Image (tube, rainbow, N blue to C red; front, side, top):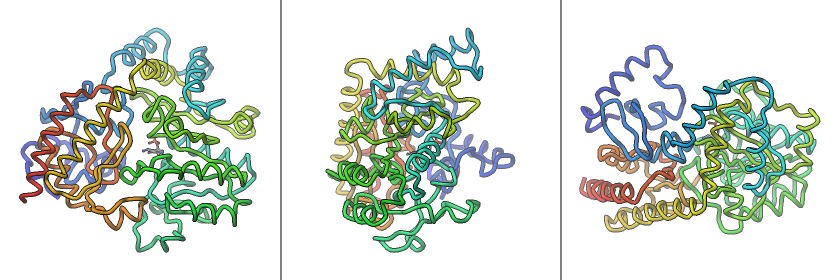
Length: 445
Ligand code: PMP
């Protein structure tokens, strides 16, 4: 692809050329690569402030990328930033010894999140999921994990499968086969995975009734946020809970995106369904790297007695703990989530209206501050619906039209828009105005 308005992004283009000489694909994470949508090159960033981000060409954007989720309080949230700066000045960063602050932080997390009886900190969502899955296998003595096509649970070998497999290699709709996200995974892991389509209660029930005795856990995002945004159908999460409990299969909610975002208590609080174990990351640290895995005390007992190791030089370092304490304090203030939902809903409903008026078939799907626009006249219930019915060419026109008008989000149709506590009604008004122009341009192309 090319940028229609290439001069606007000239400095980014030049930096990208230089970066590619020394950094593979010019970026330090796949989600920033050309093939993830940042084609012909990603924007290079100068900085951010609240709901806004500025690129090296001096363009200012209303930012719905939000670092792919962590900047839930906006960029440079003053209280979190001040707390971290003070802590690293006055304390230091890594001691490989515990600190009292960890107790208070953990108590707050347990108070906020329904399923948490005990919780351990780590650094990334990838780690948190790796630990949850290992713990589930150790606790149940079973080997297999059910996971769903179209989800992402980090890049560790055991779960880096069937995110977006492509339908030509992924088996039938009712019996998908495990497809590695790429070469380099050890052979044999696929025999430990059962891949299912999401939002299909009957199939889940059938598989667990037949094979439950060998299944350690069902691993799922409570809202599918890695194939655009796909909501659980009414009753689906509840059914998952009931079926897994009946067969001694653990239910793991990967709340890396939804945690501390759909509600202070995450998707599990929002939907009222309590998993056995859950993972958290992006919503937790106000933009600093911190993650967590926790749940039932009888399961965490295997971590407590050392049977299952959770280690990490940087786990619960001063920056992570300080940031999480300050961020949680902000998120806990009365009325915070009500306001976040009000701003987010106005944006989502406003976008729906914009596309209706332009007579462009879309589904604006999401919950509160996480959503995506599907360019489709089909309902999207799972990955295969998306693979068959989502129009990526229209999404590209939409994305680039918005970028040119100062509204930033990820160029991938399988990613999300994120709204932060820093987004204002004015941001929403300006976004909707840009959307109206962009929709008109798409309509008249
Ligand atoms: N689980 C989910 C649901 C995610 O969306 C992500 C990251 N996008 C991860 C796990 C991995 O988290 P991290 O990038 O912090 O390793």
